[in-house]
Image 1 (tube, rainbow, N blue to C red):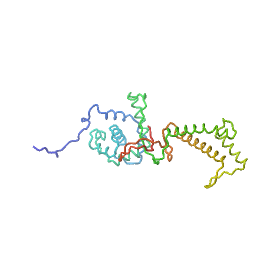
Image 2: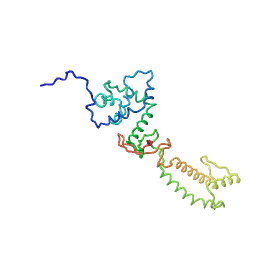
Image 3: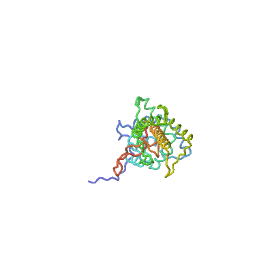
Image 4: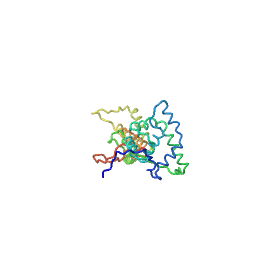
Length: 273
């Protein structure tokens, strides 16, 4: 015999269908003790179809069940008996209403409500404040992916340059009768004074012959500039292993595989919370 689905159905109490151990009970118990003054202030002179407290409970319960999309929350309000019970017979809010509540009404009060929620859980002994949980996500930076500077490369090049300077500087100091303890800056100052004293004109255009003094000066000046660049790079790096020349705050990281499965390092930010 085919069953008829068009029979008269009396209003039903959804409460009897919810398991007694379901977390929705504890959620409502805690939420009923919170102060919603600031939330109600957001609705002054604004008509509302659903109590803001009910909307807040629906949102928190959705987050507890890893439901974040406004359309998915709307669907849960129409199909999940626990969401129906939270609504207490009211019609399910549409996704636009949920989105407005999330992005407009809660903006200035969400922190206050969640602080109250956390403190209430602490009072109930559910949170001990003994542990700190850290999570992060990688966000690709708007920087050229081929402008990387690597900490190991900088350190390696700096060591090579220092070794080269330690080998050449004593010979140059001996050549010009300077102290072997003279620094690069001392040598540059000495060569500039010698240039002025001898009336030598430094030349840089093509086809011009450089004097031996100018060649020595240019070589030492280049060494000094390179050392300054390496030290500047180390200061920018800090404890990082790399950075981008076009975005000094971006670090090169291995991101999730893209559709081409390149798996290459890209400039990004690692946001921690």
